[in-house]
Image (cartoon, rainbow, N blue to C red; front, side, top):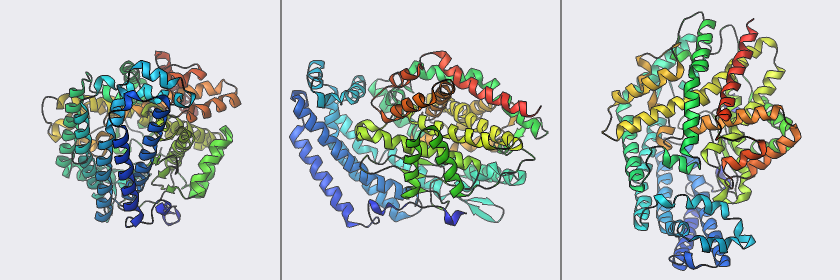
Length: 588
């Protein structure tokens, strides 16, 4: 199957990393940014509405051109992490961007400081008024901004600071090889074997993953320690009181809303993961499951490999049943070769949807190996892709949604596919499907909150001093034991598994956004079941199209939902327990 899977062609951006157009474009961008600096620096507060409009649209155009080049360098690197030339190209583009963004930082700093009278005058113009959501979010950062020179220095040093440590993590992870029988596997391949039907394969894979991570734990612990300290220093200077507050501000969500989510899931863990893994252990005739069996297929079930074309049809048909526009947009990714699905060495593990820029289109990376989970992952990333294309109409600066809302379309897409597969499956397959969906939801909600709790405890401890790999592992075991419950045996082999989680390095405190998105979708899904389907799907498309122009509260209002209410999060939990009830009924 692997050889027939699509690989994206990035030549529509540049022919290759040696394309002379790259240097030409970078020179043009540099010239544009210099002209912008010379024309507008120090003058933002005195602009009239027409000058403001010209200024911000010019800024957006420069950013668009920058991110277009960045799309190419990031995506080339994601599929060639072991190639030193590609790595150097990605790094050099990053250095260029750092310099350009440093020169442009004055714009957002000056813009955020403009007084209300001037803002109101700008907004009285219909053409300028569309920028109100962008200004609203931007001005929320006002209390935490530093001196302009300091902000410039922070941007300029990022390439040799945090970004360099992220790159070290990525390249180290991509270069790791995990022994499996007589083979050497990539991280994506060894992780895939943790859901293999053969228990011996799962055990060998789990121990191999643990062994290689253990050998590299010093470098991974150093990376985490540096990332954490770097974040603390900056957040402290900016005046953030809570270690998660700066991420919450980026996500445009209040601390108390995130606290409500975390507390609701934490309290529900006994009736979620603890209950489910106790049931699953019984299915295997055991009192406890080893951690490498956590995602194992149920015994006495077989999973037929799903060919790529069939996976494509499943996803597109599921999307079409909800709203034809979703299916039409998702179909473009297959038709135009915007998906890289083939597993190969040097390619990033996992999956993502890269939003690219509005003048181009998103790209999707998956590591497709024919399992039902892979079909779900494909649906997840295509949900992102649909969302990104719909939101692109807002322009680069207002297309991107906060992380808390970015997972909405992806998780909803998964749910559509799951329900289609469940409805069309014979009874004997429903059990495996339900179990798989419950596990995915537990991984998305409970496991991610467990990850969040690990991050909180680690970052709090790091304020006092650097942590050794063993001290990090102690926090990991404490938080994960609580998250999965007593029916999963987390032995010493599990102590180093914090080392492979990329979000801890790439985007600290990202992980709760998965739980936020899943719980939000659960609430939306329940609303969908009792609503006029056509009316709901129309509102849903409008929600995705809004991109970053509305807050979570504004987006949920048409559905009569609110993340400020505890009942909202309880709905997310009750949907998972409802699926567990449905699963247990099949046993009767």
